[in-house]
Structures are given as C-alpha cells and as structure tokens.
Amino acid sequence: MLYHLLAPLGRDYIIFNLFNYISFRAAGAVVTALLIAFAAGPAIIARLHALKVGQVVRTGLLANHEVKRGTPTMGGFIILLATVVPTLLWAPLTNRFVLVAILATLWTGAIGFLDDYLKVVQGKPRGLVARWKLIGQMTFGIALGLYLWLQPVVPETTLPATASVLPFLKYTVVLFLPITYIGFVTFVVTGSSNAVNMTDGLDGLATGLTAIAAATFAFFAYLFGRIDTTTYLNFYYLPGAGELTVFCAALMGAALGFLWFNAHPAQVFMGDTGSLAIGGALGTVAILLRAEFLLVIIGGVFVAEQVSVILQMGVYKWHKRTRGREYADAHRVFRMAPLHHHFEKKGWPETQVVVRFWVLGLLCALVALATLKVR
Image 1 (tube, rainbow, N blue to C red):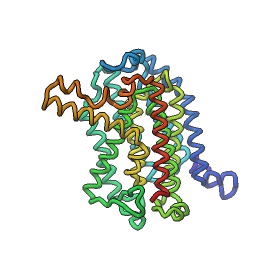
Image 2: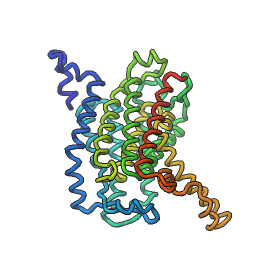
Image 3: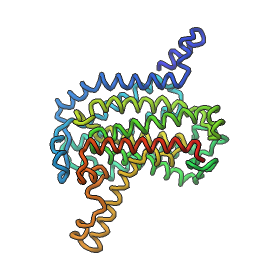
C-alpha cells in the first residue's frame, strides 16, 4: 500500500524515489515486522492466556518439558500478522510472486490453526486428523502447480514453466512433464510445511532457523530479480521475483520479533498455526524462485528433522513386523525423534541443542550461498 501511494511521488519529490528500491522497502518490511511483533505480541499472549489456550505436552517426552504444559500456543498469529501486514505495506500488490507467497502463508496457517484449535480448545489430542491435514496441504500444492504451469509467473523464454534449477551445476535444469511438475510442487509444499512443524519442539529452535532461511531466500530473490547480477553471475533471471525479497524480509523480521517471546523459557509457542504457515511460505518461495533443490540445502536442519522421523518410524515398523515389538523397541535408530529430542536424550541441555542447530542452519545458508559461484 505504501509502495502504491508513495512510489509515484518519486517523480516530483526525490525523497519518495526510495520507495522504488527493493532494498529500501525490504529494510522497511523488517523494521515494520519487528515493531508489529513487539506491539501485538503481549496482547496476543495475554489473550491466549485468558482463553486458556495452553500447550499439550505428549506423554513420554522428557521430564524438563513438563514445565511447558499450559504455556500459550497458537502464537503463530504473531508471525502471520507480522509477515502479511508489512508485505502488504511495502510490496506492490500487483506482483504475482508476492500474492502467491501471501496466499500460501495464509492457507497453510489456516490448516495449522484448525489443528491447534481442535487440540487445545476442543481437547482432541490428535488435533486435525493427519489425513485431512495432508489433504489441505496437497490441495494447495496441486492448485499452485496448476497455476504455475498454466499461468507462468515468468516468460517461457526466461525459463520453462515446469523447470527447476539444480544447484552447483551451470545451466542445468530439471524439466518436468506437467503432471509430474504438479506432483513435485505438491511434494515440496507439503514436505516443507511438515518439516518446519517437526522442528518446532524446543524454545526458539524453529523460530531462529526460520529467520536464517528467510534471510537467505531474501538474498537469492534479490539477485534473481536483477538482470545485472544474474548476467554477472551467469544465472537465470526471473523478472519480478525481486519483490519476494520484501516478503522474505518481513518473514525474517516476524521470526526475530517472535523469538523475543519464544526464547527459552518461552512465553508462547507458535503452534501449528505458525509452523505450518512458515513451512508453506518457505516451500512456496523456493518453488517461485525455481530453487526447490536449493531449499534442501537452505533448510538442511528442517530436512534432517523430518528425515529422522521418517527413519525412526520406518525402521521401527519394519523391525516390529519382522522381529517383534521387543526387538523394535531395543533397536530404534534414534533415542527419540525428531532429531532435537535425540540430543536431549543424550544429555544436551535444551538451549545447547537450539544454539548448535542454529549454527548448523547458518552453515547450511553459507553452503547455499556458495552455489552462486561454485558451479
């Protein structure tokens, strides 16, 4: 909104010409997101306290997690508010990249809200049945895949509509058949959304990793949206993609603002409302930037968390079926899944696990940035 109101004034008043620069508006989005989180956070937390929307701690978890029982959850509303509002203020609302990213965030956030509502308000321990949660995620993924195939957001002459670029390899893309591409997009959105959800188990863990991933994608979006930098780096140019820098900057600011309240000991948890929305947003940004494979690197910790759950469940079920329950119980891959609980079981304090995983997240971001030159 600010962009549409003030950028045109740049023709007559040079100061307003700043609003034509993505870098300026991205900085404005970060600051606005932080201010919204700081301003709205206490009120939202107080409201969640009043509604007794407390965290449900699953049985069998570590003893130190019992003290978290009753901590307000559904704090993802802070992240949603602090991401969407700054984006609407600082980004052009005619840009399809931005509109799709906002829709993805709200759609997956709504699924997470329904899950949280059923868990903590309706008292249903399982929340939204996994099947229906998956259907909601896949519905958006299929719709997004169809839209990007039928209405490409960049010209076909720049990059085929159903192509994905491989990191570390120069001018190498994976070209999908339309039906395969739709399935691929659905897999990326669903997998990313669930991976962040699995990571959200310790105070500040998913929040800090989100800030790192969002900042990294903001940098890539800025580069891919500039013809001069892409020409210099011999990379592909995506006209209009630079505006995703504003969205990613807002998401980073929202995560940092939420971390103020979510740092150990957490005053509030994001719940599925926040984690599914963040995962959906990051997955969609990666798809729009044709950087789906890069997402695996940038979100390396998220991927590891998701893989740890898949391995734990798969191996356990295999051993249980072939050798019995006792053997399966004694031969788990990890002491507990997701991966962060495994290290807690090994005796690492919660804060140590969180900070070390943040360090790994930064390392993943640096490896992703290296793909710009190591090709």
